[in-house]
Amino acid sequence: MSTSDSAISRSGWSDQETDLLVADYFAMLGEEMAGQSYVKAHHRRAIVEQIGRSEGSVERKHMNVSAVLTKLGLPRIRGYAPNEHAQFKRLAAAIDRYLSTNQAALEPDVTPPTLIRSVDPFVDPPPLQTRQNRSLEPIERLAHKFDPVARDARNRALGKKGEAFVLEVEERRLFAAGRKDLIRKISWVSRDVGDGAGYDIGSFDPTTGEERLIEVKTACGESRTPFFVTRNEESLSRERPNEFRLYRIFDLAIRPRIFTVCPPLRDFVRLERANWIASFS
Image 1 (tube, helix red, strand yellow):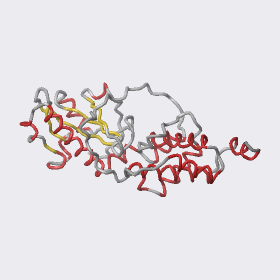
Image 2 (cartoon, rainbow, N blue to C red):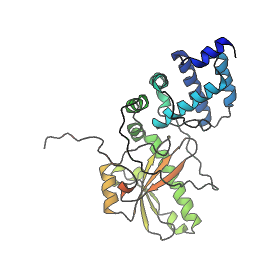
Image 3 (cartoon, rainbow, N blue to C red):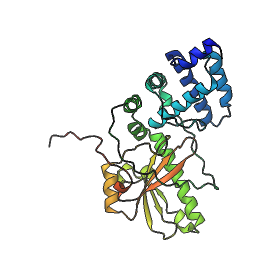
Image 4 (cartoon, rainbow, N blue to C red):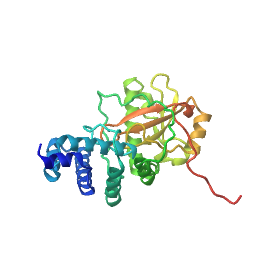
């Protein structure tokens, strides 16, 4: 390694270098979400040629980007596992600049997912972790600015794609159990009746035939991305605990999976008051 190469490897990344890498990361992510083939090594070498850093340094920085996007509830490149043990101040600022000028990246146009017969989409829910008291860090401040909870809640197109996916899942489950008589009784309540019922899909347990009231929560991010639960949904979960199920779909854009939350909801998730209603009576 030359003296200049050694100096580059020891010096911090400049804003220009970081902006270049972040833009290239989102370019690869866009290709991946569109189902287009690409070679990460080619992208990595192109960055190396432009900024003069090592391939290892560039690859580690890509993993740092994955860590930030995971916290933002956004999809990430599969081949770059999140590296959460890094300094994120300059990187968070670069991602802030990119997302502020590329709003489409916050709500990607997700192709409706295809249910693969040989793959069971159901997985275990993530464990409830003990909360750590720590000061607001760069990623956390960024997550407050680009709030993944509010963003997913207002993205109605994303929600409808998730609900359509659950309809297909439920039909497949009942068909596999030999309950064709129940398939025609499945109902898409949120579409046909409205959002006030406290659940989105009316289905049935494939074994017992008992009614299932399924509330669907959809995200492009990973399993630990937080989500809204309305007062109506929480109330219904307490009133009808045997029938109510919350289906959390995550990673919808690339490899959708589902975990189920059963009442009481507080056994699985931490529920906090997100806002207040201001009234005059």
